[in-house]
Image (tube, rainbow, N blue to C red; front, side, top):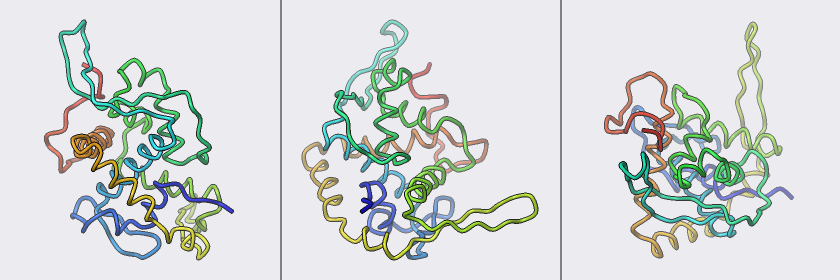
Length: 226
């Protein structure tokens, strides 16, 4: 029987992990039709994917000083380090993607900077990079037959949408283990939790395409590059 990863459980229970939407940051949940805050949902999903890898022992997370330009530029970062241990995450899940990106040379040369990891993983700019993260979660679920794919052909294009089958909804009922994982991290490492959420948010925002955003204080340019 197929199993859902922590980030997929967050997505399929989005109203439990994201608040009321803002005008510029909203998404409609497939399973309920309810709209929630898109950025908060993505923060929770990516945080869960990362913490799941910490829990399985495949990654380590620490706060450290990262130096550039022969030590002339220094900043505090969240550093993600692969342990060499493997985990059997399904392909096209955030858990598998985060673990793979953590081992890339681009991330390694930046001292495992989590912001750089997310930036590298997204690969390019999007009109809405938060929506792109949700799309990747949906694509991963669909690839394993956990979402029904609905295709509507219009002239030369095909519009794809998804629906959640009852079998997947049944798998998504128990989220206590995910809630416990998030709560335990907040209790054990309270100073890192707000930094983790902010790092995720800013890193995703850096893949924002050329449009007005609601985060005017986000640094420009890829993280780790000066």
